[in-house]
Length: 274
Image (tube, rainbow, N blue to C red; front, top):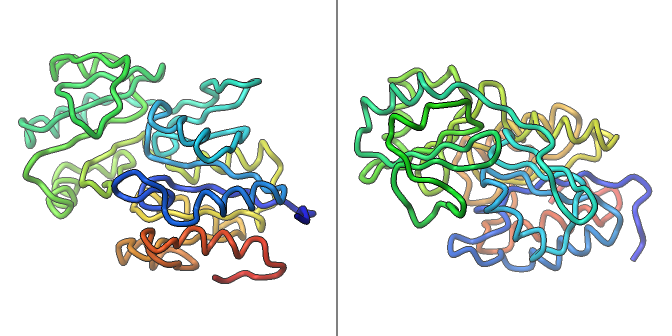
């Protein structure tokens, strides 16, 4: 395979982009990532997941990027030898946010991720990766600064979360509502885009060789960043209207192999569209 002269810096969301809802891979995505990698491009992951819930996919996709962005940009890992270490961590005081949410969602399940990576949670949930975590009382979640607060409230949907965000004034921090309708709160001004820019500068990639793909509102910052530096931002076909509108390009749904189709365009000379 011919290798590119100017490698692409590729940042990929996981859920709804690489993975289907049952956590199997989107059709053709493993092979497409391998072709992009083998052509000399740098492929990494930029996800809302914690590092513990992300690391397995590096092995399954057979990629070993220098940096990996987790926790919606609050945590960036750097490869050192065969292992990864926490390279850049953004934290904030969760006390005000937890106080507001606790008043309005007393029955919700809460989790915080400390700067060390340890997770504290009030109740278990199947979708959470809690290996090494510790169950605590709600009042103990705010004992120190955290890189994220995650809230799941049974009986509330995405619209409910949007109304709640407006009511409690969560514009004071960054937040995203995932495809399974949970609220993920990060430090103010931090998102996947801010983390990827830090990595781009570290790796000396040209802005016009940036490619990102995602499907959720937590990808909006990443889309704005990519297009702002002259790169490409691709939304999955099943993404909400506002996410598709924010992207420069829209591909097919994740169930139809949309990411594989978008990645194939990187291997075609002078093919800016999909």
